[in-house]
Structures are given as structure tokens and as C-alpha cells.
Amino acid sequence: MNLTTNLTGLELKNPTILAAGILGTTAASLKRVMQGGAGAVVTKSIGSAPRTGHPGPVVTEREYSILNAMGLPNPSYREFVSELALAKGDVPVIVSIFGANASEFQEVARGLNDAEPDGFELNVSCPHANGYGASIASNPDAIRETTEAVKDAVEVPVWVKLAPLTNIVEMGLAAQKGGADAVVAINTVPAMAIDIESGFPLLGNKVGGISGPAIKPIALKCVYELYSALNIDVIGVGGITNWRDAIEFIMAGAKAVQIGSAVYNDIGVFKDISDGVARHLKENRRSLKSIRGVAHK
Image 1 (spheres, rainbow, N blue to C red):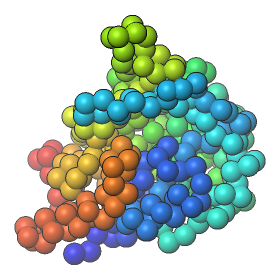
Image 2 (cartoon, rainbow, N blue to C red):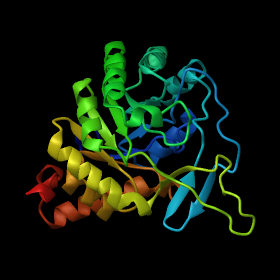
Image 3 (cartoon, rainbow, N blue to C red):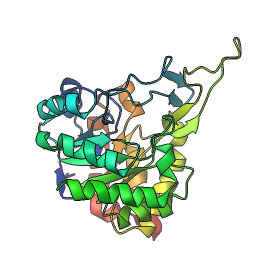
């Protein structure tokens, strides 16, 4: 069964993509994911200056979810550019970038251009780093201006990763107006957990964002609404752990799906999902194109 997917002009051998922030800090880890069967990979978010991130604990596993508050740790684009060049391989490499404003996003994108990434994903939705993400996530003017700034600086596809708990259709339309080639829905959902023995929040930053199966219904609804309103590709992400989840997102309108939390348990999840999707399509004599968005009929 042919799962080849043309996504914003990029040719993917299958519609599974490594989500940002998971095994995306080094070329070696990205290569491992490629070998695990991913159709494309997204790096960890990269900014204009080195950041150590929040104090620990930064990750805690909860029932049906993973709660994290990493704080956007990264080496800066100046240090990451050489790692990015090494990461180039058999599948498209998309760089997730962040900034405090449109000009900072543009600076980072320009700084990484020499390594020839296959695309950029704009992290305008991180829920747990003051001054970044959340300050842009619910501001349609800021999303449009940021998208326009990066589009003016690069010649590769630009994806915009949106936040839940906003008017996500309005934000998606703003990204589209700014020239985005695709939107990615959704980032993690703002959340926290408390240790009842000590009475202290479990995360060093106190609050963070949850991912994993617990947020799948939220992400699915966002993809469904964006597909109805936008003319550009929609990429689904949030709680996808098996091929049935992937089929659901495609039926809601997703052109491709990103996988994050499930990689913690099995780096081979990309091949498992692709094999399952292919088997399902073959058994039902259907294609990816024929099932995309069928939930809207």
C-alpha cells in the first residue's frame, strides 16, 4: 500500500512525523527516529540564545499523559546549525523555532538557512516559557506578523504550531493570512500536578503542559475545526499512540500526524502506525486521499 504523502511540497514516504521536542536535540537522535520509520522529523525548538530551561523535575508521567515544563532548553541557532547539517538524511528535517517576537523568529530562521532545513515549524504556542509562545498563542495579529516575517526570510515551507484553549480557528486563519503552508494542531495543554505528601507542585516550574492520550479528543476536535475553515494543510498531533488514532486524525482532515509522547515507550511506533494504516487501507480497498476528511461528510 502506497502511503507517500505530499505535504506542503515535501515528499514523505508515510504520513508519520516526529513531534517537536522529542529526541530532536542531536543529529544522532534524529537519525534513530528516521530509522524507526518516521516520514519526517521535527527538531527541538531552537531560539536566538542558549537556554538551560526550567529547574527540575521537568517531566513527570501521569495516568494517560506526560506532564512537562522543559522551558525551551536549547543551544541557540548558532550552535545548532552544525548539528542540523548532520541531521539531514533520508526524510525531511523540519526545524522548530521560537522567539519573543516576529523579528527574533526571523533572525533564528535566517541563521539556520545555511544548513538547508527542509522547512520550519513556528512554536508560537509553548505553554510554559514566560515571554514566549503563550504571549503569541492567542494574538492573531502576532501570529500573522510572525508568519509573514519568517516567510519573507526563507524559501522552504513554514508550518505554524497552534495552541489549544484559544479560538484556534481564528489563530489558524491568521497563520494562513501570514502565508503559512500548514498549521499543526495542537501543542501541549496547560496543566499541573501536586504531590499530596509534600504539598508541593511536582514540576520545578510548578505548571507545564500535558501530552499523551488524555489530550487526543481535544486535538482531534481542533483538527476537525481547522480543516473546515482553512485552505492549507492541517497536521494533527496530540495523543496519537496507534494506527487507529492516526486514521481518526486523517478522517478529521489531517494530511499527516505527529507523534511525541508515544516515542518515549517505543521508537518503532512510526513503523507500527504506518504498517497498521497500510493494512487497514488495503483491507478496506481505500487510500489515504479517500479517507481524508470523510468525517465532514
